[in-house]
Length: 408
View 1: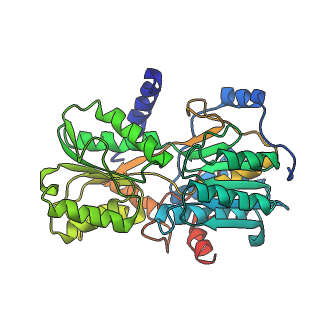
View 2 (view 1 turned 90 degrees about the vertical axis):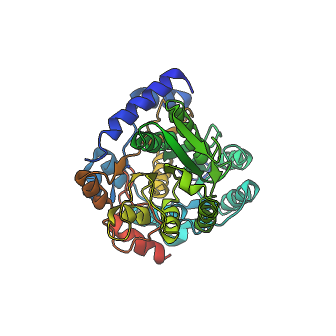
View 3 (view 1 turned 180 degrees about the vertical axis):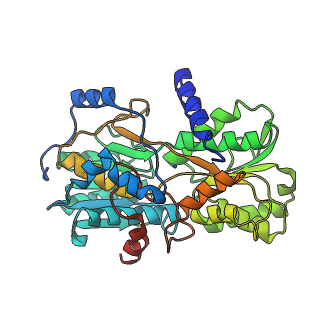
């Protein structure tokens, strides 16, 4: 990472951590020209912040949201591909927000084709080709590889189809990327955790899915902050242990870690969306909690707020909104309608919109109050992230998301 990029990210960390204790038709080309991209980059402002569900009214009143609200599904047909994490709270919610946003734009359920299954990059490429064959106008997808899908994406572009990658980036130059700033996500959580330990101690480093672009970005952010704290030791090694973002796998790994006696030797835990399962395993083993940094998963945030059942648990939640699914629908429609989209010039990839995470902890009354604001959508699955809206990118009522998902 270049020195100026590090400086910008660390400046962003200091700014955000201050709140701790206070997330055309088919066949017509829609790819932006190089000049348009340069103009958008020059005009780009700070990356949009993730809004908690309780901020939906404010989000809807923003200029960006008003622009999004002006969009209509019209006669367009959209394909959506999610090729991993079936059963994972983030992935399930992400698909659900895509359905909710499509419905908010007046889209017919039959005009949105969702392929949601566990497969590898070759399988996802096949899914993308299936969507091409259905004659969709745009394909929104969560990639499980940054470059392996490029041949299939090139076929989509040849057919005049807009492609939008959400949650992670792809290297295809004609695809737009919209995702949470995963490098900053890791930086925020790591810095909070290392500061909680006074810059000294042993941290259990748990990761997500090996080879996934989001996991790679998180590791980059974690390693950047780790270098600033020479007194922090990481186990099982500086590359961590992979959970696959799978609840059952995480529980097994945690139980093994506890039974081996290694848990008794650590001072903190950096998690990657599986904090609830880790905390549950610690509780079941009757062990004392250590500070833990994780994502804004509903079950984990409720643990942080539940002093009766989880006494002594100290933790921080970093927003990692699954509303990128709905935002991807908005971005696809913007591109189909030739509306300007501002790319982030600091993203490291072309045609990229980065979302800025927030971090909240339970160490103060204000922090707990802010966490409580995230827990405001009834019927939300405990494994789902809590930040359900993105200013300027989603227009649905967050309270309708669970029902939209259960309704198919």
